[in-house]
Image 1 (tube, rainbow, N blue to C red):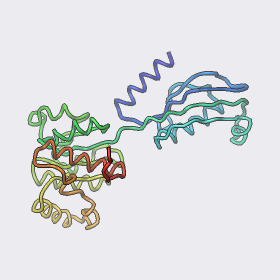
Image 2: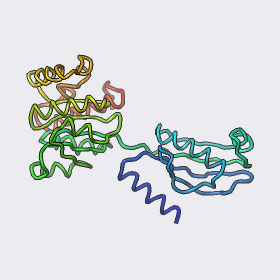
Image 3: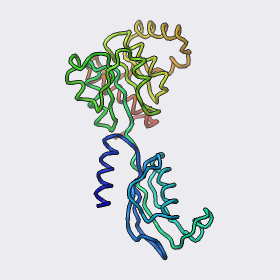
Image 4: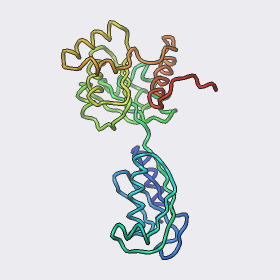
Amino acid sequence: MEYIEIVKEQLNAHKNNRSYALVTIIGTDGATTRKNGRMLVYGTGERLGTIGGGAIEALAVRDAVKAALSGESGLFSYDLNTEASAAGLACGGAMQVWIDAVPARPVLVMCGGGHVGMAVMPLARSVGFEVILVDKRPKEELGSAIEMADRFFRAEDMEKGLLELELPAGAYYVIAGPNHDADGAALAGALKKAGAYVGMIGGPPKINAIFAKLKAKGFSEGELAAVHTPIGLDISNERPEEIAVAILAEILMVKNGKGRPAGL
Protein backbone atom coordinates (compact mmCIF):
# COMPACT_ATOMS: atom_id res chain seq x y z
CA MET A 1 0.00 0.00 0.00
CA GLU A 2 2.82 2.42 0.89
CA TYR A 3 4.45 1.85 -2.51
CA ILE A 4 1.19 2.59 -4.33
CA GLU A 5 0.65 5.77 -2.33
CA ILE A 6 4.15 6.97 -3.20
CA VAL A 7 3.59 6.30 -6.90
CA LYS A 8 0.33 8.26 -6.71
CA GLU A 9 2.17 11.13 -5.01
CA GLN A 10 4.85 11.07 -7.72
CA LEU A 11 2.13 11.47 -10.35
CA ASN A 12 0.64 14.31 -8.33
CA ALA A 13 4.05 15.99 -8.04
CA HIS A 14 4.52 15.76 -11.80
CA LYS A 15 1.05 17.16 -12.44
CA ASN A 16 1.74 20.14 -10.16
CA ASN A 17 5.36 20.49 -11.32
CA ARG A 18 6.87 20.14 -7.83
CA SER A 19 10.46 19.05 -7.29
CA TYR A 20 11.02 16.12 -4.96
CA ALA A 21 13.48 13.37 -4.05
CA LEU A 22 12.81 9.66 -3.71
CA VAL A 23 14.77 7.94 -0.92
CA THR A 24 15.27 4.17 -1.25
CA ILE A 25 17.07 1.83 1.17
CA ILE A 26 19.71 -0.18 -0.70
CA GLY A 27 21.63 -1.69 2.24
CA THR A 28 21.73 -1.92 6.04
CA ASP A 29 24.10 -3.15 8.72
CA GLY A 30 23.40 -3.72 12.38
CA ALA A 31 20.37 -2.47 14.30
CA THR A 32 18.08 -0.55 11.96
CA THR A 33 14.31 -0.40 12.23
CA ARG A 34 13.79 -1.29 8.55
CA LYS A 35 15.73 -3.31 6.01
CA ASN A 36 13.84 -1.97 3.01
CA GLY A 37 11.58 0.94 2.29
CA ARG A 38 11.29 4.24 0.51
CA MET A 39 9.91 7.71 1.04
CA LEU A 40 9.18 10.75 -1.08
CA VAL A 41 10.48 14.08 0.21
CA TYR A 42 9.61 17.52 -1.17
CA GLY A 43 11.95 20.48 -1.06
CA THR A 44 9.71 21.95 1.64
CA GLY A 45 10.39 18.97 3.91
CA GLU A 46 6.94 17.43 3.44
CA ARG A 47 7.22 13.67 3.02
CA LEU A 48 5.30 10.48 2.39
CA GLY A 49 6.44 7.01 3.39
CA THR A 50 9.22 6.02 5.76
CA ILE A 51 12.60 4.33 5.91
CA GLY A 52 12.27 3.59 9.60
CA GLY A 53 11.92 6.87 11.41
CA GLY A 54 14.24 8.11 14.12
CA ALA A 55 17.83 9.18 13.53
CA ILE A 56 18.18 7.56 10.12
CA GLU A 57 15.09 9.24 8.75
CA ALA A 58 16.06 12.62 10.17
CA LEU A 59 19.41 12.49 8.40
CA ALA A 60 17.93 11.18 5.15
CA VAL A 61 15.21 13.85 5.07
CA ARG A 62 17.88 16.50 5.54
CA ASP A 63 19.82 15.23 2.52
CA ALA A 64 16.69 14.58 0.45
CA VAL A 65 15.52 18.17 0.89
CA LYS A 66 18.91 19.37 -0.38
CA ALA A 67 18.70 16.97 -3.32
CA ALA A 68 15.17 18.06 -4.23
CA LEU A 69 16.26 21.69 -4.29
CA SER A 70 19.57 21.14 -6.11
CA GLY A 71 18.44 18.44 -8.52
CA GLU A 72 21.48 16.28 -7.67
CA SER A 73 21.00 12.56 -6.99
CA GLY A 74 23.45 10.48 -4.98
CA LEU A 75 24.37 7.60 -2.68
CA PHE A 76 24.31 8.39 1.03
CA SER A 77 25.61 6.32 3.95
CA TYR A 78 24.66 6.88 7.57
CA ASP A 79 26.70 5.39 10.41
CA LEU A 80 24.48 6.17 13.33
CA ASN A 81 27.10 5.32 15.91
CA THR A 82 28.85 8.55 14.90
CA GLU A 83 26.44 10.84 13.01
CA ALA A 84 23.39 10.36 15.21
CA SER A 85 25.27 10.71 18.46
CA ALA A 86 26.78 13.95 17.21
CA ALA A 87 23.24 15.19 16.50
CA GLY A 88 22.06 14.16 19.96
CA LEU A 89 20.02 11.21 18.68
CA ALA A 90 20.20 7.68 19.97
CA CYS A 91 20.21 4.74 17.60
CA GLY A 92 22.63 2.17 16.24
CA GLY A 93 23.52 0.52 12.97
CA ALA A 94 24.23 1.83 9.50
CA MET A 95 22.21 2.34 6.35
CA GLN A 96 22.88 3.17 2.73
CA VAL A 97 20.21 4.93 0.67
CA TRP A 98 19.95 6.15 -2.88
CA ILE A 99 18.40 9.60 -3.13
CA ASP A 100 16.96 10.20 -6.59
CA ALA A 101 16.29 13.89 -7.22
CA VAL A 102 13.42 14.74 -9.57
CA PRO A 103 13.57 18.47 -10.28
CA ALA A 104 10.57 20.48 -11.36
CA ARG A 105 10.40 21.28 -15.05
CA PRO A 106 11.57 24.75 -16.03
CA VAL A 107 8.65 27.10 -16.61
CA LEU A 108 8.09 29.05 -19.82
CA VAL A 109 5.53 31.85 -19.57
CA MET A 110 4.07 32.53 -23.01
CA CYS A 111 2.63 36.05 -23.05
CA GLY A 112 0.35 35.88 -26.05
CA GLY A 113 -1.40 32.99 -27.77
CA GLY A 114 -1.17 34.15 -31.39
CA HIS A 115 0.61 32.49 -34.31
CA VAL A 116 4.07 32.74 -32.74
CA GLY A 117 2.83 31.62 -29.33
CA MET A 118 1.07 28.62 -30.87
CA ALA A 119 4.33 27.62 -32.54
CA VAL A 120 6.46 28.18 -29.43
CA MET A 121 4.31 26.30 -26.89
CA PRO A 122 4.35 22.74 -28.30
CA LEU A 123 8.04 23.06 -29.09
CA ALA A 124 8.80 24.22 -25.54
CA ARG A 125 6.82 21.34 -24.06
CA SER A 126 8.67 18.87 -26.28
CA VAL A 127 12.00 19.91 -24.72
CA GLY A 128 10.74 19.66 -21.14
CA PHE A 129 9.23 23.03 -20.22
CA GLU A 130 6.00 23.52 -18.34
CA VAL A 131 4.17 26.11 -20.44
CA ILE A 132 1.90 28.73 -18.91
CA LEU A 133 -0.09 30.83 -21.37
CA VAL A 134 -1.06 34.33 -20.24
CA ASP A 135 -3.24 36.45 -22.52
CA LYS A 136 -5.66 39.33 -22.15
CA ARG A 137 -8.09 37.83 -24.63
CA PRO A 138 -10.94 35.48 -23.61
CA LYS A 139 -10.82 31.75 -24.27
CA GLU A 140 -13.24 32.07 -27.16
CA GLU A 141 -10.77 34.21 -29.12
CA LEU A 142 -7.75 32.05 -28.36
CA GLY A 143 -9.30 28.75 -29.41
CA SER A 144 -6.85 25.85 -29.69
CA ALA A 145 -3.95 27.90 -28.30
CA ILE A 146 -5.16 27.11 -24.78
CA GLU A 147 -4.83 23.37 -25.41
CA MET A 148 -1.16 23.84 -26.27
CA ALA A 149 -0.33 25.10 -22.76
CA ASP A 150 -0.22 23.24 -19.47
CA ARG A 151 -2.08 26.12 -17.82
CA PHE A 152 -3.91 29.24 -19.02
CA PHE A 153 -4.51 32.51 -17.20
CA ARG A 154 -6.50 35.41 -18.57
CA ALA A 155 -5.09 38.79 -17.54
CA GLU A 156 -6.88 41.87 -18.85
CA ASP A 157 -3.95 43.88 -17.47
CA MET A 158 -0.86 41.89 -18.44
CA GLU A 159 1.50 43.58 -15.97
CA LYS A 160 -0.85 43.15 -13.03
CA GLY A 161 -1.73 39.62 -14.10
CA LEU A 162 1.89 38.48 -14.22
CA LEU A 163 2.62 40.02 -10.85
CA GLU A 164 -0.35 38.26 -9.27
CA LEU A 165 0.57 34.85 -10.66
CA GLU A 166 2.61 32.50 -8.49
CA LEU A 167 5.53 31.87 -10.81
CA PRO A 168 8.86 30.32 -9.82
CA ALA A 169 12.04 32.34 -9.70
CA GLY A 170 14.03 31.74 -12.85
CA ALA A 171 11.06 31.33 -15.20
CA TYR A 172 11.46 32.08 -18.92
CA TYR A 173 9.21 34.78 -20.41
CA VAL A 174 8.37 35.03 -24.11
CA ILE A 175 6.36 38.10 -25.07
CA ALA A 176 4.44 38.02 -28.35
CA GLY A 177 1.03 39.48 -27.65
CA PRO A 178 -1.76 40.97 -29.78
CA ASN A 179 -0.52 44.59 -29.69
CA HIS A 180 2.18 46.95 -28.44
CA ASP A 181 0.28 47.96 -25.32
CA ALA A 182 -0.18 44.35 -24.22
CA ASP A 183 3.47 43.58 -24.87
CA GLY A 184 4.65 46.67 -23.02
CA ALA A 185 2.57 45.73 -19.99
CA ALA A 186 3.78 42.12 -20.16
CA LEU A 187 7.38 43.28 -20.37
CA ALA A 188 6.95 45.47 -17.30
CA GLY A 189 5.51 42.55 -15.36
CA ALA A 190 8.18 40.10 -16.54
CA LEU A 191 11.00 42.48 -15.59
CA LYS A 192 9.57 42.84 -12.09
CA LYS A 193 9.49 39.04 -11.80
CA ALA A 194 13.23 38.85 -12.53
CA GLY A 195 13.11 35.73 -14.69
CA ALA A 196 16.04 33.78 -16.08
CA TYR A 197 15.11 35.01 -19.55
CA VAL A 198 12.86 37.78 -20.84
CA GLY A 199 12.40 38.05 -24.59
CA MET A 200 10.05 40.19 -26.68
CA ILE A 201 9.21 39.96 -30.35
CA GLY A 202 9.39 43.15 -32.39
CA GLY A 203 11.40 45.46 -34.60
CA PRO A 204 13.20 48.71 -33.70
CA PRO A 205 10.14 51.06 -33.82
CA LYS A 206 8.15 48.86 -31.42
CA ILE A 207 11.12 48.22 -29.14
CA ASN A 208 12.06 51.90 -28.94
CA ALA A 209 8.48 52.97 -28.20
CA ILE A 210 7.99 50.39 -25.44
CA PHE A 211 11.40 51.05 -23.90
CA ALA A 212 10.68 54.80 -23.81
CA LYS A 213 7.45 54.16 -21.89
CA LEU A 214 9.17 51.82 -19.45
CA LYS A 215 11.99 54.29 -18.84
CA ALA A 216 9.36 56.88 -17.98
CA LYS A 217 7.94 54.37 -15.46
CA GLY A 218 11.31 54.04 -13.76
CA PHE A 219 12.93 51.02 -15.40
CA SER A 220 16.69 51.40 -15.74
CA GLU A 221 18.89 51.13 -18.83
CA GLY A 222 20.41 47.99 -17.33
CA GLU A 223 17.05 46.28 -16.89
CA LEU A 224 16.01 47.05 -20.45
CA ALA A 225 19.39 46.05 -21.88
CA ALA A 226 18.86 42.56 -20.42
CA VAL A 227 15.74 42.02 -22.56
CA HIS A 228 16.30 39.71 -25.53
CA THR A 229 14.77 41.77 -28.30
CA PRO A 230 14.46 41.28 -31.21
CA ILE A 231 13.85 37.83 -29.79
CA GLY A 232 15.60 34.63 -30.83
CA LEU A 233 18.74 33.67 -32.69
CA ASP A 234 19.18 35.08 -36.18
CA ILE A 235 18.43 31.79 -37.95
CA SER A 236 14.80 32.09 -39.08
CA ASN A 237 12.65 33.59 -41.77
CA GLU A 238 9.24 35.11 -41.01
CA ARG A 239 7.35 31.82 -40.59
CA PRO A 240 6.03 31.31 -37.03
CA GLU A 241 7.47 27.79 -36.90
CA GLU A 242 10.99 28.98 -37.70
CA ILE A 243 10.65 31.94 -35.33
CA ALA A 244 9.70 29.45 -32.61
CA VAL A 245 12.83 27.39 -33.27
CA ALA A 246 14.95 30.55 -33.09
CA ILE A 247 13.33 31.55 -29.79
CA LEU A 248 13.75 28.13 -28.18
CA ALA A 249 17.34 27.92 -29.41
CA GLU A 250 18.12 31.19 -27.66
CA ILE A 251 16.33 30.12 -24.48
CA LEU A 252 18.21 26.80 -24.38
CA MET A 253 21.47 28.66 -24.93
CA VAL A 254 20.71 30.81 -21.87
CA LYS A 255 19.40 27.87 -19.82
CA ASN A 256 22.31 25.55 -20.53
CA GLY A 257 25.06 28.16 -20.72
CA LYS A 258 26.13 27.10 -24.19
CA GLY A 259 26.24 28.75 -27.57
CA ARG A 260 28.75 27.03 -29.81
CA PRO A 261 28.00 24.65 -32.70
CA ALA A 262 27.46 21.21 -31.20
CA GLY A 263 29.30 19.37 -33.96
CA LEU A 264 26.75 16.57 -33.97
